[in-house]
Length: 114
Image (cartoon, rainbow, N blue to C red; front, side, top):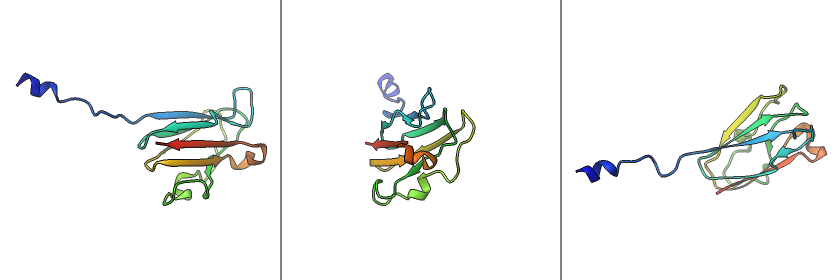
């Protein structure tokens, strides 16, 4: 009977959240880190760090089939330092995204969901 109680445990997998800075600490127009990897069910929180306003827009040609680009992209911008945007990812694959105001400056990011 004691063994049966011992087998009741926490789930084997607990969802995690990865943080990505929008703008480097020195004010560079980039995502830090530029590439992140998470597991299905995990989330990413983008934090407006420096050089805003920033946003996160996914490239509709560079996300897994069946994923809605509009559903996972921001529809506004983060203007204040410390503002955040979070999204949970349930579909495995490669995701490319960018900051719309700073795309021309090369502010692009990549996310791998395994």
